[in-house]
Image (cartoon, rainbow, N blue to C red):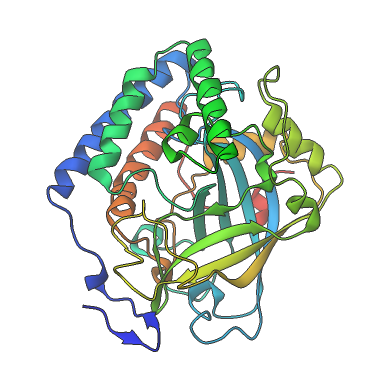
Length: 367
């Protein structure tokens, strides 16, 4: 078992426990994802991501690591106070590209560029980037890869449903969740099909699953810090008559506004109450609150220029396994993502005639 120094669980290989038939489950996931990508490629005559295929904003930003962090937070990427350029991509979860009126979970992916002098993970050898691929939830929608495979089978069965049907299901789920909110209830399952029609930039985005945090184990989150972002929390965005209302809202904001997110880290102090292998369980913040280790700032810019969209959507990939060795993804779901992300990206690039590659400079992001 892992050792505990002070109140923080130290990382070692034993914090991960391989699941029964894990390889078979991941192989089935890869087969299903491939079938779905082939179907979507036939539909669009263009290969898209299996998840988070519809982008809504592509930003240039800066990660500023805080100075004078305590030793337990001064780990990996956050071990030295400095600035890193970043590429930020906002998206919604499905691989199926639909109108924004079909509401689904949102994503914020950040690629930190220009990291030098630190050991990269095996999937990032020779590169100088660190990816964070987050969603607007504190927990993952399944406890393990086997359960998530069941979710993927449901998606496969409904992938050819008419968009009008998907919109109807989305509206019903949204209404039920709103009604539950009135009486103090909540349905995480329904929220997957009926997320509120709110502004992307007002959301908090988290890793859901654990990652290595140098000597320790953590979850990470991006939380609105600037007042203009906080003002967008829960703000209604009219999407019923706008195919890309979310993109339009992001583009309009960044015509004049600067956004700042806080980068927070929640260190694991108890492996039973804060499990590594079950990302569907929320880590109690009363036991270990999120603590600030830096900020991400994005200044006014064209948030969705044609060249920038093509570069981020067609050339780049955002993968939690594009990581420093100090920030290795942990747990069954993350281990499944290692091969599924790679296979999905390989298919997409081969069908679209693109070459894989990670940026070495922020100058590679078009204006």
